Image 1 (cartoon, helix red, strand yellow):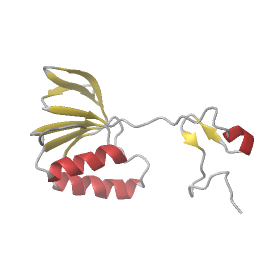
Image 2: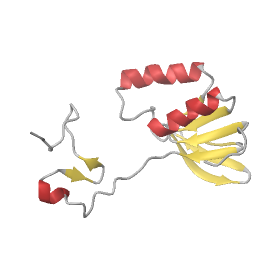
Image 3: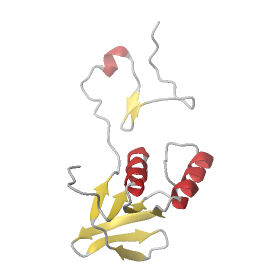
Length: 136
């Protein structure tokens, strides 16, 4: 993110923690912000009731959301995305920020040897966020 000025408009792809942080930041700086999220809700790791409250709060701040929408094309003409109902829409934006998440790289770091359970999503946790790691 090397910007020499605050953009007039910004589209953020992804409404996870990183996307929402940037959305809030740039909105506070005066940028017109739109967030496109593939899921039907924001902050997928958050409690749904809290996420719903957060969505309303961010919308009240002026951030626009397109939920249950998948980006299909980005080019000089704009950003195309398809809504859950199959309708394709296009919008213009000065900048686009891809905040679609990260994938853990847990291979060959010794987790198997010490008994840490993991899968393609990362280290496994139970409903309380506990892992198979215990330190005495």
